[in-house]
Image (cartoon, rainbow, N blue to C red; front, side, top):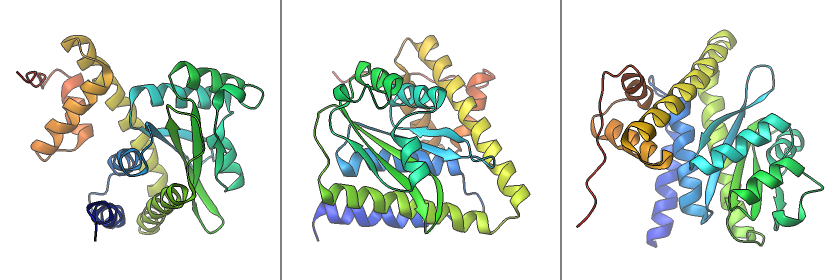
Length: 242
């Protein structure tokens, strides 16, 4: 078994580990976004998840630029994730410079952010679609069939994990958990902005610093974010290599 095959296997094992007491959907989908970028060779990944009203919300993005593009998609209610979510089928555009007639504002935001192609994959289980995964590339061209198959498998595995976890709770609890997850995302974004401003670093580096601290101290990312916002915790950037 090659190193890449072993890594794929490790990721699928990790995505299946959702039936635990301290399951956190935000951290789970943050890891999924990072894994998609790593394993699929794309530049960035964003994940939209539907709330109990069926409205899509941004719950994870592997980079700050991808997050901003996804927010434009939500504001305009147009883009590949909306199509993948509504149809339950993958949506791909190999050259966003030619997509202005399809998704005008999303396309403008994506191209302005340096992304030239996109692939959206539905998060589905049979006839149920929970959301969509957006894969951004800084080059034009379609993803090959093997990459799309692996990407869809990752999205499906994550969907199965979320569905199984939800099955353990009543609908009222599930709704509360999703709302808490969205509140956690807001808190994390606030902490990222606070660190970016106070340490004079970019937002992606601020998030990496928070995540590293949380992992090193075995703490939840949302707890660390709250401590930062409430000024109970001060982080310092890692020294630059000599």
